[in-house]
Length: 115
Length: 112
Image (tube, rainbow over the protein chains, first blue to last red):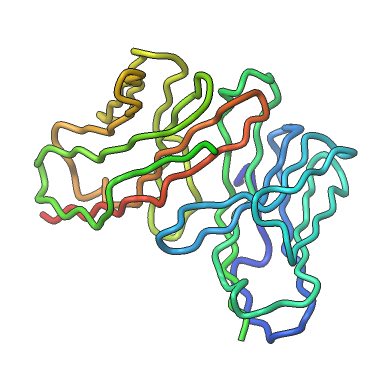
C-alpha cells in the first residue's frame, strides 16, 4: 500500500464550486505539505503543517485553505474554485529532524480542472 | 529570495547516451540540494541529495556534486535507459524549515 495517498485522483469542477482534496499518510511523519504543479513552473508550496496545531502559508496560499484533522490527514480546500486553479496538486510528508535535509515523500497527485 | 534554475527541456537522447542536466541555485547560507524524479503519472520521488559542499549524491547510476564555488548541482548519468524517461527536478532547502524550492523541471525522453 502507498505511504501517501490522495483523493480524488482526478476532478473536474465548475467555477465557484467548493472542492476539497484529501491527503493521508501512514509514514508517521509530523510534517505535511501541499504543492501545486504547473507546466514550466515546477512545484510551488501552498501550505505546510509541522504538527496538528501548526499550519503555515506557503508562497501561493491565496484562494486556498487547509485543515490538519490528525497527524495522518491534511486536507486542501478551494472555497470558490476559479479556472487558474487548474493544476496538478501534490501532498507530501517529511520527518522532523530540523536539520533541513529531510526527504519529502510525495503522493501520486490530484489532477484538478476548473471549467 | 532563494531560487533554482535548471536547463529547459525537453532533452531527447538515444539509449546509452551520456546525460547532463544543469542546475544552478541562489541561496543564503548553506542549502541542502536535491534531485527529484517524476515518472509518468506518478508523484515525485527523491533521486539523490547532497547536504554540504563537495558532497556527491548518487543513486541508480545518477550522480550530482554540490559545487559551492559555482553554485551548481548538475545531474549526470553515463548511460541512460528508456526507463529513465521522466521529468527531473532540482530543488533546495535553505534554513531549518524543510521548505523545498524547486526548479521548473526538465523532461527527459530516451529512445531505443
